[in-house]
Image 1 (spheres, rainbow, N blue to C red):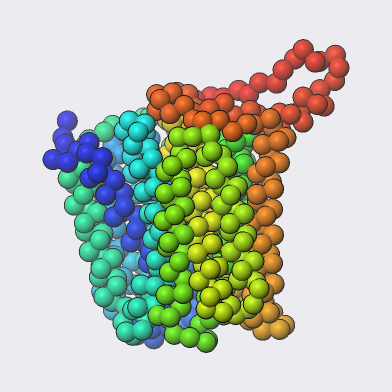
Image 2 (cartoon, rainbow, N blue to C red; image 1 turned 45 degrees about the vertical axis):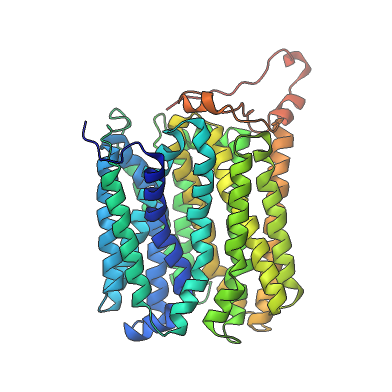
Length: 501
């Protein structure tokens, strides 16, 4: 078996994961203040730039499903090496882009390769090492996704203040090269996951068409009304395709994604709901409040004001690492939703917020978001055998990407078009975000109560064995079902049939 000199070494593999995920995730948040500069120098309209960003996000979302399919039929580490090469190509294209078309093509490649790397690299890091390493993996996962995103506004502000964007993108390209080197050094040839699994082209087609159409419709809000056919038809059609994907996978006898296993079990459903609502709620807390401040202060100052998001993400990552092996992991997403709601309330006190309120609000929202999505993802993953972890991550990241990246332009559109102006529209959107945060928390608690689910410490040794979940997750709404069982059927207890992939 071919092996690299650093194969099997946790620190090297973890570093490879970090360098693979950070470039696109940090860049996606840093491009905001750089948009006018890049558009002017590459002769792109605002609509063209918005479309490019939307297609990159669509590639990221759809790539999660594609990665699962590739993992079933191709040697996974060889595919990881190919993904890394493509990430370098895409990063160099964006940094050296002579025109808008090249920049957009490179950014789309970055989005696609990041999701391919996420699904291919993170689950093996989580389940390929002893249970005592899972705490480190939890912290790394949180920092890669939310730490990188929260740092974006500052590094984008620094570059915007210097009226330069290529240095940042060349740094991103350099990080991608380091990721490629680490993939090669940690290479450990591994076979496909399951050569007997079907090639589910309908699932890939539904995911691709759904994401591309939905994000295309959302991106067109830059220059079109919400009810314009060019916006509304692809937006609704794309969402319908994603719903069709879920229904198709639920009914399939040999599904590519573990949809049926997840949505018929209480704890995974609660985890997915919390992750989606947190992703959607955070949009109003960050994107819109930054937009309000852009006409009042420079990009560098805005980046500094939102730097507490990074501190909040670091604190929540540490907290996640401390509870990942304990019963209290079930409570962390709930606490995170409450903290996220508190951050939105701070922003809502005054629009635009004062300097002090912005610092406090950004810190709370960073802490709240970091304490919800990644912990909720692991809560969902622990509820199924670890052999399904790639599929669980793919489902959650697909839904999270749609909730976060697609909701943002919709919120911005309605805030800008509000009768009272951007400030009034942002204030209204913050109320919506607050409702999403509190509503997501209440729905999660209600699912636990209605299903009889109880917080449990995960049995990680059993989970890492590959064929059993880390805890027992009762069927969805099991308590309600028992209460509605006819008296003559009291002796019959409902059971959950689970097919292990």
